[in-house]
Amino acid sequence: MKRLVTLLPPFIAIMLITSSCVVQESPITGSKRAYAYSWDQEVRIGQQVDREIVAEFGLFEDEVIDAYYQEMSKAILENSHMRREETAQRFRETEFTFRVLDSPVINAFALPGGYVYVTRGLMAHMNNEAQLAVVIGHEIGHVAARHASQRGLQQTLGQVAVIGGAILGQELLGLPGESILNLSGQAAQLIFLSYSRSHERESDRLGVEYAAKTGYAAEEGAAFFTSLKRISERSGQALPSLLSTHPDPGEREQTIPRLAEEWREKGYEQNIRNTDKYMQMIDGLIYGDNPRNGFKEDGFYYHPEMEFQFTVPENWRLVNQPTQVVLVGPESQAVMILRIDRESTSAQESVKSFLDANDVQQAEERSARSSGSIPAYEANFSIQDGDQLLGVNVYALEYGDRVYRYINYTAEHRFEDFKPNFDSTTRSFNTLRNDRILNIQPVRLQVTQTDRRARFSDLLPDRLPMNIDPEEIAIVNQVHLDEMIEAGTWVKIPVQ
Image (tube, rainbow, N blue to C red; front, top):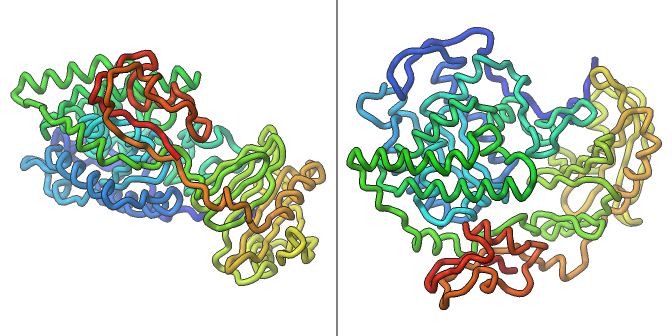
């Protein structure tokens, strides 16, 4: 049956070997075992999926932080199995890529073939280099142990719960979560891959080993996992991404110092913490969502950089991403997706190209206007998508030098119920003129050393920006609100 092909991102054309296997050596042990992919395939997969990651999540454009992360990561890599004399040449010569993503989520992950990512949200929650070193080592460990390729023997594409609670937590009208993310199934599977606990524990051991052999005080990693445990308890739900299938953070509070001590007994001193250097480096780091990239407030979505706004229907959830805005209706029964159409030069061309791509033969088309002055064009039609019939509204508009296109859909029998929501949102698209919103700036961490001994709660300003509460900032600083803080201690305070 014909499908809404432009709703679904293009699939990466890589051979996935899930029903057979490849026998190759492990960079960790040197012994041979079965993998889903050859090493060359892992490298190619990493290269192609990396392009999707950068396009969809965006890089954090800060030259100082990027250089800092690169230098740290490469030093840790040199002390990993991937760079040892006894390791096979194909592994030793593999180039690694380290990236900081522009995301507030506390996250780190790796792709096969040598791609390691951390988010600015994760970096904000670290108190020194040693803590970050353990996480970097952990992700290098996943690559070195070829965990994704091991896991691939046990799961075929699509069997992994690739999204879980990270974005929407469920399918929407049969549209898988990776489509909402605008990622291919391959990319989503690799990012949100559910490793076994044995794989996670192995990467914990490797992360401590690599950090310790680089000279870092690896036991510091325990404090970060204590913070993650507090975040989990505070939210009342499972931790996202980095933690969802990992050993319990409380377990890691115990095992990481023990593992670090074992390496100290083997002669690795582990003196590097670089607290001052790290804190100075993250001073001014963007904290939380960056409102310059779009945000919801009082029933409106605002995008200060692109200078537009539109209404968000009551009880609809909004997912803001670098390349699209997704609105999800009550009980996930309807979806609106706004993207820039870079291929079309007019609203009418944008709608008609969508219809042609989906081989829509019968559609109700008309010219329209957003906010009474912005040229627009729309089409309504029904289409079979897999085993369900969808009612679809495609609405494109010409604003500035761009064409924006909404793709709005629901089950065909609910189309008339949700059409007023579709219309209220698309027709309210308008120029943003509010100076306060146009000039809004992100929250940043102001990192300073205290000049007095005081309870942490007494060091906080009377009002925190963007609905941030004191407990959240205590967790960011890895302290408790009633904890006494000595003079000269580094503290991270959000300011706007």
